[in-house]
Structure formats: C-alpha cells, structure tokens
Length: 446
Image (cartoon, rainbow, N blue to C red):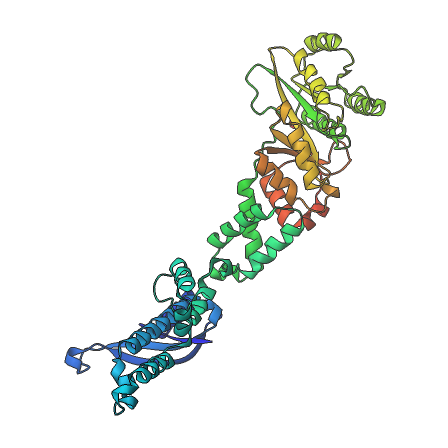
C-alpha cells in the first residue's frame, strides 16, 4: 500500500481527484484543513485548502512507483560518485606513520580499503567490465552500473511485463459471455472499447446499463433492407433468386413471402423453381402456389422457361433453387445459366437464405461460396431453433451484407418477419428472446 497527499479547494474536490486519479480502490485515511500562501509569511490573506491522505494499492500507482525507484537509483549513483572522489590518502591514513619501505604494502592496503567501500555491484563490474558495460549501454545508458537497481527498474518497465488496463467487470462479463457464444475476440474488443467510451462511471455500476448500450451499439452496425422491390428501377419487373444450402429453408420462406406480397400487399406474384432434383421440393412449392392461386412453373428446359417468362405478367417472380453444395463451383455455374433467360425489362437480385443454427465456420464458408452470384441481402431462417445469434450478426457485418427477413417457424404464411436492427441486436445480447419470437400478423392493405 502506498500513501499520497491530495490538495483541493474543499473535501469533495479532494475526493473527486482521488477517484479520478487512483480509481475505486483508493481509500481516504485522514483529512485536514491547511493554509497556503499569505503576505510575507504572516498568514494574512492566506488561502484555505483541504488536504487528504490517500492509501493507494501498489498496482494502481505503478507510475509513481517507477519514478520513486528511479529517484532512489539516482541517489545511489550520487553516493557512488562521492565515494570515488574521496582522496586516497584519507583512506590509507592507518599506514601514514610507517616507513617508506612499506610503500608497496600501503598501496595494496589502500586498494583493498577502496574496494571495501565500493558497492558489491561496482566491484563485480570492475572485475568484468567489457560484458557489463555493453549490456548497460543497450538497456539504459544512464546510471546502470548498479546491477541490483537496474534489475529492479527493468522489472517494472520491461514491455513484456506491462499489463493492459483492466476492463470494467460488467463489460468483461458481457465480452466473456458473447465470446463463449461464438463471436470473435476482435469484434468484441471493438465493442468493449466503444462501451467504455460511451458509458460514464455511474452507468458502468449497473450491468443493465452495459447491456442496453451494447444493444444500441449493435443496432448501429447491423444493416437492414426488408423491401423486396428495393433498388428496382421504375418500369422493371423484380426477379429474385433464393440461394443457399440444402435444408436452409428456401422453399418455405418463398411461400411465406409470396403470401405476404400477394395476399396482403396485392402484388402480382409468380413462383418458379429450378430444383429438378428433389420431387418433394417441387410438389411442396406447387402446393403453396395452388393454395394461394399463384402461377407456378418448374424450369426443366431453359428455352421453355424463357418462353414462359415472356408470357408472365407478374410484377414479382420468386425463384426457388436447388440446394447445391457450396463446395462445388460447377453447381453455381449451372445456377447462373438460369439468369440468362430473363430479358432487359427484368431486374434480377439474389438473396442468400442462411440458417441461424449453423456453426459460424460453416456459415462463413457458405457466405463466401455464394459470392460469385452477387447476393446483397440475407434471409435468416430458423430463429426459433437457434440458441445464439451473435456469430451470424457478426458475419453479416464482416462481409457487409444486409438482413432482409427473419423466418421464425414453419407456419405459412405467418412465421416470417421483416428484419429489424433492434430485434437482431436484442437477440444477440438477450438470447432468451429467441424463444419468444412470434410471427407477423398480417392485415390486408388493398
């Protein structure tokens, strides 16, 4: 424990200085009122001040400790220099009454007495000067002939032993939890720095304030666009290909969006599929199309598909695709052939359908594999089955993609929501919210 004095205009000012300079672990031990200044030492017009004695844990006062050690080192150096400057005759006065024949003996005795008053570290340096002088010059050029003092100072200031400033326990608690839930340390370090900058010492005292501010921070990073017609030039028809691995929920999500835009928004919607491998997937989408009274076409031939598209008068065409393995590039090349059948009046977009239950490594691999098809938005599915959402939200931020919709169950057409920044951010910070997400309640607008 170190003790320091702090002066201020009043007691509250002193305590505030103590907290700001030494943190919450500093303790007030004593206080007093003093006077400072005055005319000619008479005390007339002297300023009344408060002074307190503060106990500071040593780890909170490392700067002062280093300065103190350096000051002690300088004092040792001065003492050494004074010892070396003493006249040799004064050190050998015990032999002054002896005959000149004893000169050699006196010289030996004088040398022995000089060595006796020198510090041990100085005697060791003189015994082996070349090696020690080189080391001293490299590490600290001033006053490093005393090895004990050198070691004590370097022990404090060596970069390998410097500790990073401790993070507030409430912020560290949140970082540790999100790290265990799949988010990366780099992303969380950025968030921690932002939280420390935005929260005052009073706010940091409550964990709820930290989590609320974390939600706000994530809202700023999440990008959202929940309009399927977004970016479509005037007068053009919107074509949307839904891509993603098998089992990600493409077919069910398309049916939900078809219901949303046709039954509840009054748009003319057609459903297409390029999945000629899974008969069950074709039958499933056809069942939804028939139930909603929407045109449906299974593309088995590119030429016939092009003819069908030319006759199609829909405003919005939603295209289901096969769940190709993202590890095989030839599958993506085959998928891109279907893009060529659309004409100049069509505006094509690709949306990646990604399950929120996949591991972060698998999600990253899928996201990178589908980059050649140029998707800009993500439809996130199976939120009702997910435990945590942090890694998927971080992925979208890392690859600069927007969220479009959130699928929260199997019920068609209701279990889909427009993605919102607040909902996604809250599900990351409060994962228990994932269990209570409900689908959208539609109201007919036309």
